[in-house]
Image 1 (cartoon, rainbow, N blue to C red):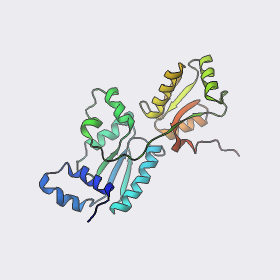
Image 2: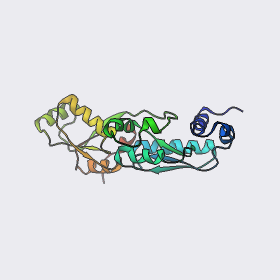
Image 3: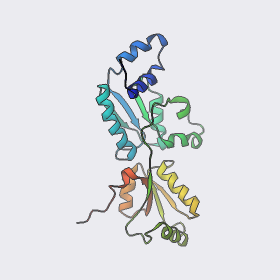
Image 4: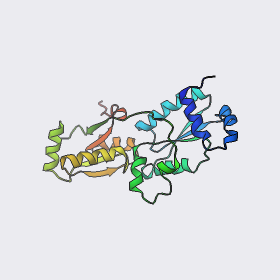
Length: 220
């Protein structure tokens, strides 16, 4: 019997944690119950949306429910710790992303690390970021934005979905490349950051295309 590649990868990842004598029998029975995927940010963000779409496909292929469990906080460390401390039986998976690799240097004393405690299974997506500004912002182009920021240092608020996340690091990279001063304002996830941008509480945000496209003002 041929096993689809995706299913084989899941079987292999879980089986690696079990004694060699029981691996074959375990693989044939897996999955015998629901699988939980831990997501490191709140619902509504690009990684969460992608995980739910992948989870639907996994459920159809594997014949078991796939539960999406959002555990935001500490730049992804809470989700990482939840998965690392779960039984190594293939039923608790982690949606890992760049922040988990970044945390290797940000949290030197972290008892759990992505490189030591987690085994990679598969890559599911690549992110493309865009720059968002409030409609009332005076600048309408990137050069105009840079010029305005240099003329008003420290007066532009940069929103992110959390310290250390890609939305934060993309803004910091832009700031370093252009020599401007931005005030970082972290939020607990993408939806509240979008809400603050629409309310003009912050003026700029760097965000993946997937979650940025629906962000617009509602006109009566």
